Image (cartoon, rainbow, N blue to C red; front, side, top):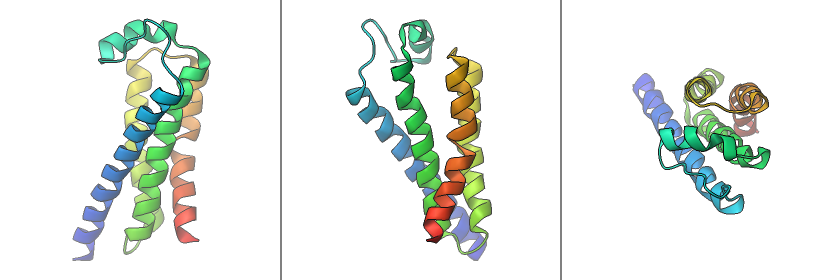
Length: 134
């Protein structure tokens, strides 16, 4: 029974983390507007517009990735009945997989790709775990 509860908690934490990710994207788009002519309505449009992006435009996706991972890891670390760090790392791996896919699929500056993959996932998952344990 505990395993089933942990799996449901894991799915819930991932979903709430995904909502946090999307909220960060939406709010970031309001705070840091896209450059004139940029279209991010589809993956193809984003690929065609990526050359218009300035460094400041990469803050939003980084914060979104970090926030989603942190929130998901924090929640599963609070909710899981055992093996909290392992579950937090499962959240981090799941979000990292999406980030890795985006790095492979979308052309972006190397500094952003490196920062995103190195900082936004596993460190944020571990930080979420640590904050939940306090």
